[in-house]
Image (cartoon, rainbow, N blue to C red):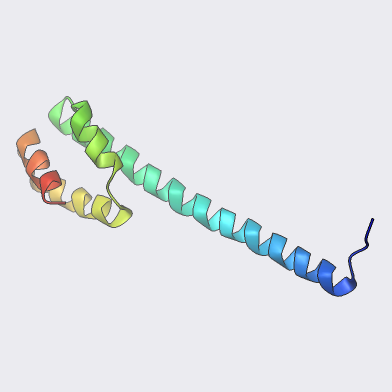
Length: 90
């Protein structure tokens, strides 16, 4: 069994720390995205009483920026047709 040198141990620890930090950041971003999706789906379902699975599937594919844009746009939606039209442009 080979022993790591002090330099190799420091590099390993640094890499491990950077990996953990990167994982935390990715997890935070993913959590924020999922939270936006959940709130928008709830708002749309409350507004229109129903959300067809086809539209829900399209919401799942939106980026975080697009979800933000939808949050503003939905204030002007009168029907699910407005949502469908908005999604077709994205």
